[in-house]
Length: 117
Image (cartoon, rainbow, N blue to C red):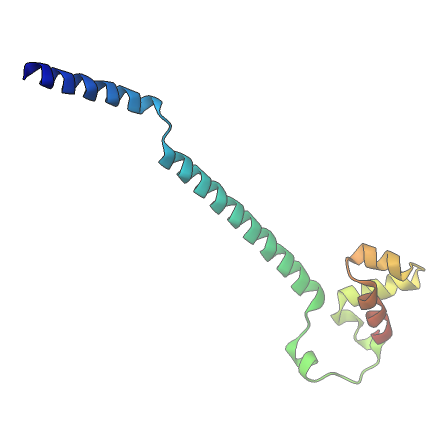
């Protein structure tokens, strides 16, 4: 009986010592989840910044969208900074392809903007 108790105690101590040398799987999972959450937060932050920039460049007052004005194009130039930039570049002699590359818009969008401005 004493041999059994001593054997169980020895096995217990050996397993306890071995537990410190084995990799903790939960710790690895926690690190992976933490890295995933950090990368998700970074992606969300970048997307919010991109959306903010797009809103500043492209969006106008809701009143202008619902009720378009019949004013000449030169009076609306203060409201659309991206449109003004495209028109200025076109007036300076840039080609539509160059303007599209510079503004990250498609050539079709550039042509449409130039027709409206």
